[in-house]
Image (tube, rainbow, N blue to C red; front, top):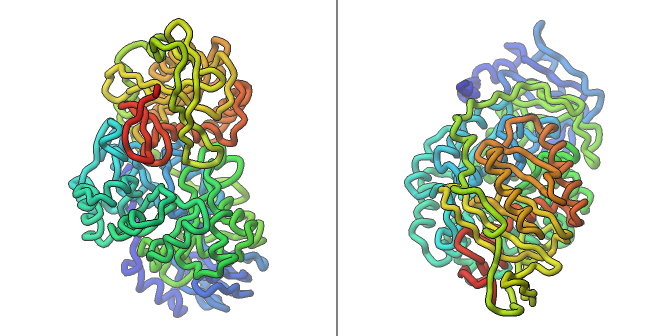
Length: 594
């Protein structure tokens, strides 16, 4: 199914002018509304809006002259009308859903515009995978713009992915209709050190007049940070404290503060606005990564905006950070992000600006959700068969594949330390026992990176601490940011082998084994990353997985996110890749056994 291009403002300008002037009837008129103007930070009581051809034609005190015999008229009875919410940085794949099912899940929460970086699928299927995501995104009844992935692999000298993205791919994608810019430039050491490839990708984006996404995952705000800003990234979502947010805004970047399923970085950074009193125009709210379970149970951008308000932010400022600030950042302030003539008629009806209940959602002038139910059709792409056959281990794994052998009686090991609710890990050093020549994860767990793209049969082993798992368990996932090989964490090597082989059997996903049997399975057959089932079905399986993780001894909040990030070799301090254990503080390999 080919997407139907949404008419541009020039396409329908004559109709908008005629409707606003009263010469032609509107398609829709909303009356008796408290219209929230984020462009001026005002609430206009009793105002009315008229919509024509999916765009706002009139916004003012009286739209009666826009009403004709066939105009749909809705009395909002004094409720607020706010712009549809915009997510400035996110990864659809993190929801374990295809673009269609992700859209169906978030539309009832008031998200009408998304800026998504599909670098997860880029690591599995390259530019072709990006194009498939892009094409399905354009089929949806709300706005999903694509940021062309910049770093696949994220750090090429530290990992091997299924495919690589280069400047020529970026140049090609800049001509696609739904591409809005370059995805997060995770290879910040490359930019800082003058990598010609990274600078070429940025240059191709800037030549196209589009936005360069940033990712500076380091607490160092010295010369390296300034060098990164000089390279061209226009935003950054990796800040975790007030100083991070301020530093980015002072350098002319947008500080993107996130609330995802596992990232809680709004409270610690929004104080730059609420307490320091800085200009909020350069701060944007985003989610980055949200699981299907979060979308179904807690919400999406409405959850993030509500949280910002709970942290002391003025509701109108919080709404600016999730609407007009985002639109302006991507050069779309004449298209989305505010209730004003000519813009797409994306809007939300709500009875309270602080608690933000999402009662009715309009996308491009059409009612797409009401009372938590999606009313719109979200078309699916016909995904090619080979995209459902991406888990290639090359052999059936056995317990012996997960052994770490030594001649010593006891060893000192470098251990990955998981940090709850944060992306960074800790570099721990622990003494571990040896039995029968095999190093044992005494009181912690083993971690393995299993190669799945080229069927090499490769398994890299190390140790991880912080999950709290008891004996006899293993969890495997083909969601392994960003290389998306397979991560297996366990306290029993036989169970680790069973979990890995199970994912090869079902084509990808997440599985947890305990006491000799499978306790939970989330099938993600598309690229080993996504399901084309409804979010409610995926969320139910994720709930069972979370329960199984708890039963196995894990008490961390959203521990699955920590699991899936253990191969992300651009976020400190220790990570694992197909090449070995990575010290991200130095961007060099480091031995497991000292």
